[in-house]
Every structure is written in structure tokens, then in C-alpha cells.
Length: 122
Length: 106
Image 1 (tube, rainbow over the protein chains, first blue to last red):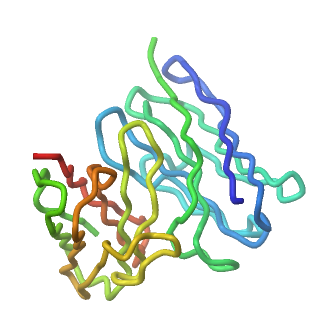
Image 2 (image 1 turned 180 degrees about the horizontal axis):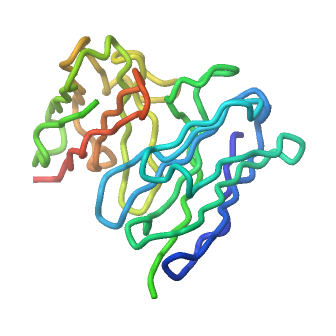
Image 3 (image 1 turned 135 degrees about the horizontal axis):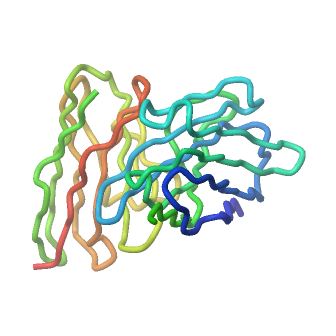
């Protein structure tokens, strides 16, 4: 069974940093691109970042470029999102999600983590 | 690429057939996906490539369209179908979602 278990959310002050984690199991992690998608309270879904299966290629939404870093540890079957210079508008539930195809980065996701709430407030 | 869904909300009854429309601001071929999200839960993957049903998803869901105009159809509505539905284009970066359509029980 494919599982994505997230951790690391919480309350952080504006300008602060936080790292989200996503532990994967039930599939060959190093064969799939992975993604982060967020959802502000009461709002819709917003794609944040993607990383290729090897970690070689990364993509970011414009508003997080230079502030967020996506990375993965294929030996540990884990995905991470390092967030810095956080702003109030980054407040959201962050979901990790698996690409639905192996090897390729298609920006189509099939399995999702349970979500982690990040609140940026003083 | 902007994705616009209509309607934003919809009321229907168990057993009804409903359609949700998604329009892209430019042609995206068939690179269109649909997701369902229940309150407090992660989204669920329903349809990819505009009309391909994800494994394990009931055939009461179907998708159609290409280019800029797409439709999600749900037949014989069941209580578990009342949720919010999002379209998403995977044609170009950044991938973008529609604003969502909230399907409510009448």
C-alpha cells in the first residue's frame, strides 16, 4: 500500500524557517518524481514545487523561488521542503504528492500525504 | 495558464447527474486532471489526460474535452460524492488548478 506520511508543520514567525518531511512507503521511491502542493485556509490548491526521481531537476512556483528548497533522500525514502523567509501568505496546509508515472515528471499526482499545517504569524 | 471552473458551487440530490466545466486560458491538449477533495482530507485523484479514469475510481465519474474546454460528469450521485472538485492542467509549468467547484446536497 502506497503511504506518504508527513511531519514538520507548526507555527513560525514571519521571516522564520521550517522544514517539512514526507516519508514514503509501499512503492519504489526513487522511481517517482515528487511534489508539494499547498492549500491556504478556505482556499483552493496551489502547486508549490516538484523534484525529479533522481533529484536532478527541481521546479518552483514563482512566489517561493529563492525561499523554498525541495530535496529528497532516496536512501531514506523521504522528501523534504525547506522553507525560509516565511511570510504570512505562506500559511497553508502543505501536501506532499507522488507523480503518477515512473521516471517522468508529469505534474500529475496520484497519492497524497495527509497534509501539514504551516502557520506564519507573530 | 489560468483554469476557470463553473459553477463555483452546485446543489444536487442523490441519484442526480451533474456536470462541472473547466476552461483553460490557452490550449492544453488533453493535459487535464480532475481531483476530489472532501473537507479536512487530502485530494483524491480521479481522472487524468482529460478522460482516463484512475484505477479504483468508480465509473460514475467520467471526463471529456480537449484544447480549452473540459467537462467532469458524475452520474447517479452518491452521498460520498458531495465534495469539492478541482481541475488541474499539467501541460506547462507552473501546473495550475481551477478554483474548485463545491458540490452540495440539496
